[in-house]
Structure formats: structure tokens, C-alpha cells
Image (tube, rainbow, N blue to C red; front, side, top):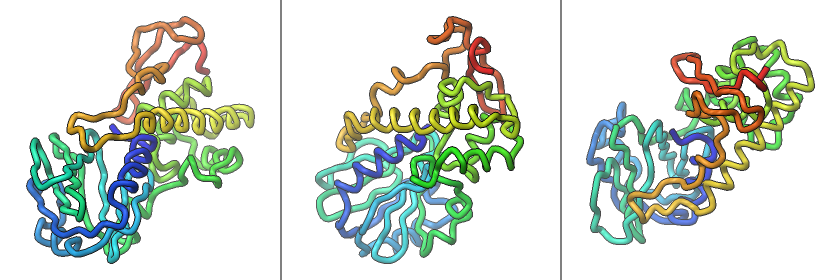
Length: 269
């Protein structure tokens, strides 16, 4: 599932590709991708508009138009593809015909969504996002306040988009391994040294992953593109039963909030 680093890399690559271009037409090939809006409404609202900026909020990809916003959420498997000509191949959910080619939104499992908003404030999901962990305002003191006001297990708090926007299941597990903290530990019981270690781990893991996602950068012209090398960064995620690369203990998996949490009982306390 694309999390903050993947969506940020997509936003930067898409900005270079489509910023300043006019949307001549919007074709919805699979209506499920634009629910609850209708294909007709989406096409009417975005056709004729220019893409002024591409940015990210949490896990949302936002295209700021000359009027309104085009909002994309990739969910589990969504991604972008690009065609230099009108000739398209493969599965496309939504196609934006631009001046220099076609930008397509693809999600074969149909969990991802594309929609238009007059204002970002009209989206409860976007309005409810918490602090971006790569922003300058995200410091150890701010994190300490978030932790103290919650009391939830650490893994669940890190994945709460209303507290910290952009972290998902994979990087939350990795962050807690780097911070040497048990994902089941309650957030309001951390010492200041634990908080500082957790803050450092969040920033480190996300920046390392973003660097990996940018080198090589997303290649939307390749319909099979995906991020390369991320598996080399993972220390606990999806490694149940394998040896911890720090202390040698076995990696365990537990369920939290309906999701799998991976951690090392030997060095995560």
C-alpha cells in the first residue's frame, strides 16, 4: 500500500510531467473509481481546467486546478501511468487527456478513488489529517504531546491519520523497530528518551524510504513500474519467524486493529 514516501515520490514525478498542462477531456472507464461522484460530474468539473500544482497531503495526491482540486487516493494498489499519444493499452480506470499525453489512474482491485472538490475543506478525510511527519513543525515536543493525549498502543497511534498523516502499516512497524519500542506499548507511558528516539526513527525511516522511492524516480511510461529496492530497507515487516538483524531473536507477528504488527521481543521493549 502506498504510504507517505511513495505518494510523495509520485507527487514530485507527476509535477514535472503535468504541471501547467490543460485537461482537454476526462474519461472514466470504470465508474467505481470515482464513487460517490458520477463519471459525468467528474468529467464536467475537470475538463478545460489547467493543472497548476501537484502536491501531497498525507496519503492523498492532490492536483490543484485552475478551479477546484482533483483528489486521488491510491489505497492498496493504485498507481499512475502515462501515454505520450492517444494510444492506450492495459487497464485504465480514469484517463486525463492533456496537451502532451494522457495521464491514467490504474487500480485493478478498484479500491483507489479519484474525485473533484471545489475546496479541500469539503473533504472530511483531508480536513481530519494530522501533522505531516516530514514538516518542520513535527518535532519531539509535538510528538510528546500527541502521545500523552492518546494512551493508545503505539502502533495504532502511528497509523491514526488524524494524529500523524502518512504512516501506514509497513513504516509504522519499521519505525518502532528502529526506536526499539514494542508496538503494543501504550503511548502515554513513554519517557522523554523514548519519545526522542521515536521521533528520530519516524523521520529517519520516512526519509530513507523517500530517497529509495526517488532513485529511480517513478516511471509512469512503464505500465509495470513500481518502487524498487524498498524491501532492502525493511527490518521487521513481513519477516515473521526470521532472525532480528539487530539482536538475533525471532521476529513475531501480532494482530492490532485488524492489521499485522511485526516486532522483535528481544530488543523492542
